[in-house]
Amino acid sequence: MTASGLTFDTGVLIALERRAQRAWNVYRAAREAKVRITVPSVVLAEWWRGRTDAREHVRSGMVIEWLSEQLAAVAGEALGSVPSATTIDAIVMASAASRGDVVYTSDLEDLERLRLYFPTVRVLTV
Image 1 (cartoon, rainbow, N blue to C red):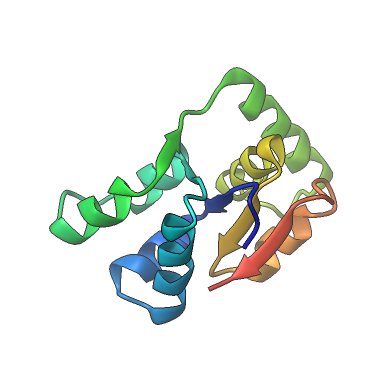
Image 2: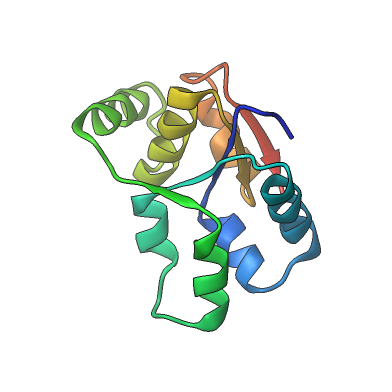
């Protein structure tokens, strides 16, 4: 874990909701160290399927980053460079790159491809 911050993708939120131990270890350590956890708003949209106590608890420890025009443009440029990438994954990586965050994911392979465009972003799995 680094002091720069963490960005979570949808898979991490699902893992937290399902009480996966590794995901909770990362989440708790970040919270205890007061490390910012960012979730792009499109990730929230992909994950959120209605209010539950578990979702509210997970959500309460994160900062939701709304999609700005600048972030959307950077993600779009990444999609142009890595055509096999998905829009949400490109937004996750662009978001993390803008702050120097580490990205946590459950789908390492997809985000690793985007490192061609975002080489400074470190990607770890839960």
